[in-house]
Amino acid sequence: MNCGSMTQRPALPPARCDALAGFLLTLMIAASVMPGTSLLPAGILGWSAALLLSDRLGQRQRIQTGWLIGLGVVGIAWGALHGAPLNLSQILAGNQGLVSLLAAVSFLRLVTRPEAANSDAPPPRGRKALWRTLIGVHLFGAVINLSTVVILGDRMTTHGRLGKRRALALSRGFAAAAFWSPFFSAMAAALTYAPGAKLGVVILAGLPMAALSLWLTTREIDPENPRLGAPFIGYPMNFGALWIPGLLVAIVLALHALIPRWSILAIITLSAPLLTVAILRVRERGNAGASLKAHVTQGLASTVNELALFLAAGILAAGLTSLTWTMGGWLPFNHFGPLQASLLLAAMVGIAALGVHPIISIAACGVWLTPLHPEPNLLAITLLMAWAIGVPANPLSGLHLMMQGRYGIDGYAFLRWNGAYVLKCLGAGATLLYVYGALLRVSV
View 1 (tube, rainbow, N blue to C red):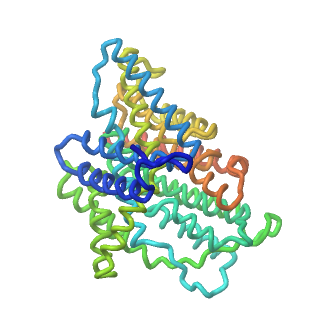
View 2: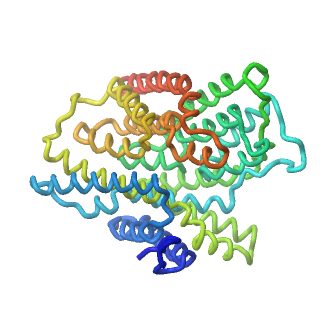
View 3: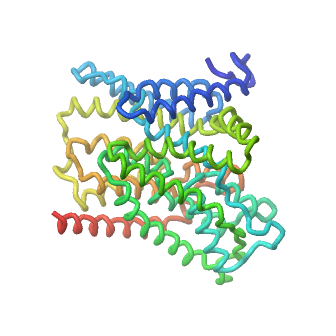
């Protein structure tokens, strides 16, 4: 059952489908945080919501999702024919922690928005404006995801156009949050496919990479250099709302310290909606219920593209696991150290430049490396960097496709503009991996 399209008679009106899918996703969030229980019920709820919302998928998402599911099913079938065990929970809920986090964090949009400090003032210009815009899109984007780019971008346009400088500031500032943000899908994917990784260690490793990426961007854009194009027009950022994600981080870390067996993903998944409800009750009092209802019945449906992609990637991972079982664990190397991590990082970014979403290569590489039992933090740091560097390199990423559709900037223009930036980040990333490897040897 789905909503149908404009050329088909729908089984349910689109608004009813959105509302029902939102209700299922809310139940999915609750089912996924129950300690000591199977994630299969949550996975079934997620798939049910995705099927209800399938007509919302764009053509590219349909093709990509279909290929992932098809390849995963082929791998599962091949493994089953050769004696590999069939794990229904892994097939339907392999990426459930990631999917639930995606839905749960979307509630933060209700209480955390990058509002302008003065909506009537002329937009700021110069290096200070660039830094405030970069840090603003970086920090708010780390919490409420892609909607930050739209909010800032719409205010920064001139006659509906952004221009190269402003487009790079928004896209790179946002993508760099994937280096460290616990609210990004990148972190959920890294912790899913690098089980045992410590959130604090991974964040500490990602912060210097994020700072470096922002610095590289300011050096390249340089709003004071007239030879680089039109003057940079920034966003009058008000950072007052950032206390909310800061409070959420403190809650998550405190709960994890008190209940170490409870996974970080589950804690964030539960805490984000509950904190949102508490803040809305204080701010809006009697209107809090209406805001929450609107998000459940309408807002959650907007996550369908990521929802379908991550669910399909879970089937691909299950297929790869089954296929790997039949191959006897063959790998081109026998351990996973800084050299192997650096080669893997370069390969994953190269694959991203071909238009492949990072979650696909993360799922594939995470499963592929399992027999080596890699050091969890080293693997998680590598996967996060592959996402954060791979998105600017990917002309078909969701970020670049959104900017193409909204601001008329060709996705392949970003591939040209970001070439040198990506290579510099790869060099810095490899250096970080070797530094972490050296610290591991010292600590042993």
